[in-house]
Image (cartoon, rainbow over the protein chains, first blue to last red):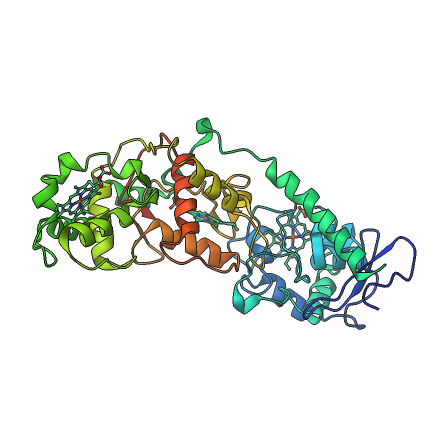
Length: 144
Length: 261
């Protein structure tokens, strides 16, 4: 079932270790990975934690309480205006589907990786629940 | 779609991605820039003044070891090599070198250990041991200010192997050395300026480590950062990376023992 296409133009992604299958439509993943909406408060904690979300290693964002932000990626300000929830989900799950040579890690993919350290093998960077929290938080970043 | 087809499709996407990465070129010589140039004035001053540079403590130890009769042969390095200021001038700048006896590359640390075993009848010293860091710092100092020049003809295969590793995406974060050090140097990763990743200051004192460390220690740190399986000290892979990095830094001035944040 993992790889059965249900709709034309939709590319299903096979289930991997600790990663459930999901359906890609264009540049978006319409359905929540967990079936529910994430918690934006927890999402903020993940995004701004250098060791959990890692986002601020590369991105800047409207977070005056976070020192030492990166300069390798676009500012997250307004991400919720630029993208729909479904598009945001695609970009966090596997941004290489949108920008093939991106440096942004795929947060919900365990295949096609090489030489992963044993303690991280078979595990996505974030769990489905954490991704939904992050997406819910990004959707609140409306200002431009 | 069958699982097979699905996998093939993903593999196809990855081939496209790696073809793009493969098209990248070696850092051009005219763009070479030492991490020194991006350091805060206080850190530079610490490297510049021998009296303030903590690496000089290891150099002093190294000088004493150079003169000490060692191993069951009871021979000192100095017994055979004399004054290091002369005999070892410029040597570290051309390591890793091709070792005809072993038919492969040998690092400076590997060469020191070969002399310990073959010429002093002593045990090899472990990477990051106080003694090996001291001896390599003392020898590297004799190349300070000298341009890096390894034997690219004899080391061609090793350089190519190192380049492949440098460009390979790896680890849970799926990044290659080249993506940071060729394509994003000068940018900030959190608060740290991404350097070009040159080997010209090693062994060096890193404020974060609070100690002197070898180039291989640094390479292992970067591999840990991208959550990749590490390579062992002295492994073929780290030697290949070290050799490629020295070739990539050809012509740059040696700074050992450097200081880095």
